[in-house]
Structures are given as C-alpha cells and as structure tokens.
Image (cartoon, rainbow, N blue to C red; front, side):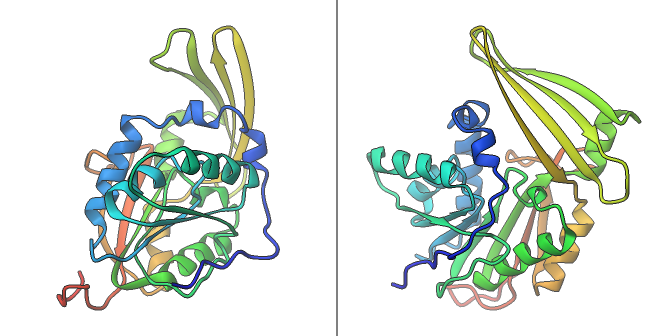
Length: 271
C-alpha cells in the first residue's frame, strides 16, 4: 500500500488556530455526526476500497465512518486540527483506521483510488476563489475509482441570502442542549458579486465565552454541479441534510452526490 503524500508547503488560512479549543464544542461528536457517517457509509461501494475526506478537521465524521466502512484518509491544512485528530485516533478503542494527512485540498494527490471522497461541513466554502473551488473538486475526482462517489456538503447561497431577509448584516443565536450553552453568530454579506460571507461566532458556556471568525464564499448547487462536470463527474442526487430531507432553494445547506463514470467493484455499470 502506498502511503498518502504529505505536501511540503501547505497554505493554512488559520481556521484551526481561530477555533482551537472549542471547535469540538460547536461541532460535537454526537448523533448528528453518527447519522452523517451512516449515510456516507451507505454511499460507499463496500468493496474494500478506502475513503478520502477533504477537510477532515478533528475527525468528527471520519472516525465513526472508519468504523462503518473501513480506512479513511483525512486531509486538512490545519496543524491544530490534525493534532486533535491524531490524539483522538490514538485514544479510540475499536475498529476503524483514520490516517491524518497535512495537505492542501486544492493540490492533494496520492497514488491510491478511493470508492468514496467527501468534503462536508462547508469546507468547500472556505476556498474564496472559484478557481480554487474547482481545483478541489478536480483533485477529489482524480482520486475516485471508476464508479466511485464524491459527496459535497456546503452552505447554500440562496438559503443564506434568505436568512438575511434583504439585510447586509444579521445575527442569530443557537441554544445547545447543555445548560448555559449556545452559539451567537454575527453574519455579514460582503458587497460585490463574489458572494463572500463573514461570520463571527461567540461560543457561550457556563459564563465563559470564546470568539472565532471565518470568511466563506457561498456557492449554489448549480455552481458545484458545474465544477463536477468539468472534473468529469455525473450528478447522482441532492438533499438538504443527512436525514434525507428534499432539497429546496431556501435550505441553508445542501448535499450533492456525483459519480465517476466507469464500472463498480461488482462489475455493474456506475450511475
């Protein structure tokens, strides 16, 4: 088996440093993560091939998915995130292998073929240039085995615009199940035609607060479809969330699936 290639120079936007220490509180290893992993496992060909995640973070999805579908190779540009992932993997007691790779999803390559490649939790939106978003989708497509599936989950441009109700700035609060815990977000749509979105998040927990900010480029499903078509992939389905809610234009997120034309591991035509 050829090990994944770690790129010598990795451009890191600093997301891991910005949210270090409370990222796993905002995105916990909970039933929602398990549900996403179960759905991804159902889309895996279950032919013994590995899975590749672009933007693995601390392994919220990769770790439960590895227990269900076998080895996951997780690529991320954040050393802080990967440190937490490696610590979590070392502490895991059970089946499943997750290999953490420090890399840039716009350039990543190795010599392996994957039955499933996925890029979730709006990782694609962290790339602020359409050419860079295209590059990430193209690199993902190159690693897919014939008949393999690419899954992209990201913020829906129209849904985010609707959330602002015509305003450039808005804010909203999401309470969490634990007492005295929640997330306040101050959301700004930047002027211009690139659909850039700035969000500052304040995490409240038991009388303490932490602040993290991020910049995203909002995309539409049609735009991601176009990236996939350039990369030689064919559409296979779209939904609004991990429980299979049908996609609508006002959904805040969307999950799109694509397949690489070819033959599945069992000899059946893909599609």
